[in-house]
Picture 1 (cartoon, rainbow, N blue to C red):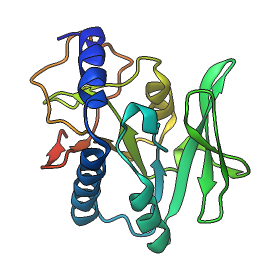
Picture 2 (cartoon, rainbow, N blue to C red; picture 1 turned 60 degrees about the horizontal axis):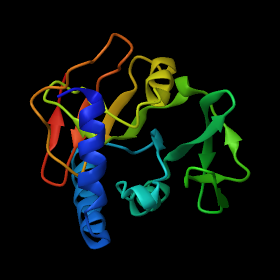
Picture 3 (spheres, rainbow, N blue to C red; picture 1 turned 90 degrees about the vertical axis):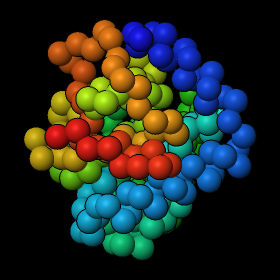
Length: 188
């Protein structure tokens, strides 16, 4: 399937999941990530979920990273021009919701993309080769292109992979891994 059709299908699939299932699946995803990867002393970028879109809930995982004494980073979306900036967050960070429903840090210290060791990537769908489908704005592709070459890219998905995504282009940056509630998939 192509990205447009997959985006439509998986937004609908995700919208029908009850909040209890989102919570349970999120816990399973991050339990697998915690047991599979050494995150100690890393700088880790974690998205803040848009709850109205039933995204994987990262709150408990972020608290775990704080306990590990990781440097935790998130993004702020800018709309004119469209893009992301990145900042360090901690237990005391205050947030406000932007026009898309994304929690955004009110005051935080900026950080360059090339300082990030691991990026946890939200997505709608992914395939057996590490191809991914997000919301279609290309924000994560631009972000990941600026990260250092050794930065680990870990997608999180409520659903298992599909065989193949058509319409992938040279600007699309694939995942290194993807965590679902059932398994960690490795692509490289």
